[in-house]
Length: 262
Image (cartoon, rainbow, N blue to C red; front, side, top):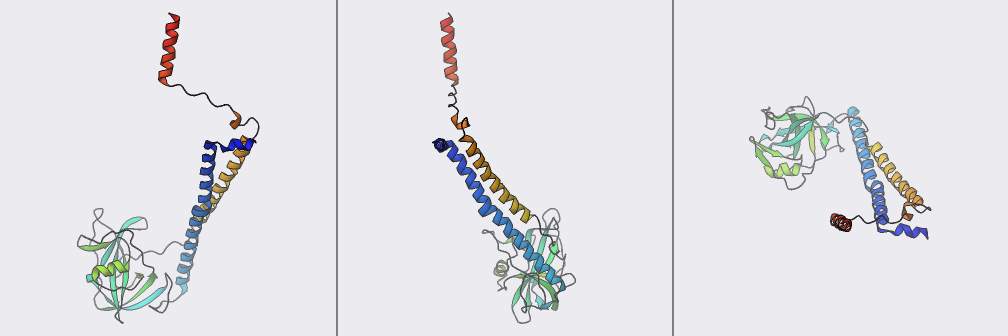
């Protein structure tokens, strides 16, 4: 049968690569983009809902981006800076100051951003106000610090790589509640108020569909070339190419011809 021609090692390897790529498109790459699209939709919905929902007392509502009010005092001695951040496409630090509520528990407040000076140095910035204050902020899920990056002490400030309440709390010997609060403009202690995410779907859905299309086209291409090669006169019918001669063999043949001529 002509199908036996497809059992050549080179053809089998090529087919395996094509199938593996197509499976990656269907099971990894496209689902990844679909998930990013779903996450963006959820974020947009939460931000949109927060525009009309009045602020609620902290602890009475849940859900990221919900606006809440809280009362307590800042703990500036436990402050840390989140490094290697970007705000509106420009490098920034975010100032993280623990905040003790009137019930005694401690939360982490992101007071906003400051721009580095001289490339990477921390600029002077306003200290958190003293005494009891009332804040309005948005609920945010805490980040997870990847790897075993340690806390830095640089420019006289404690610096972290992620807004992780557990990491900030461990460095300051505080038990900080999960999540953090992003301070709104006008609240006591706010610096550069962090902007809200843009309410757009992004390109993730189109990327997912593109990966599916790539997988389908790859499989269709494999089927087409398989059909073409099993037809009479296909490449698999061509005789084996002559073995390429080495340089030593060519020189030996030239020398033999020269001897024969003399």
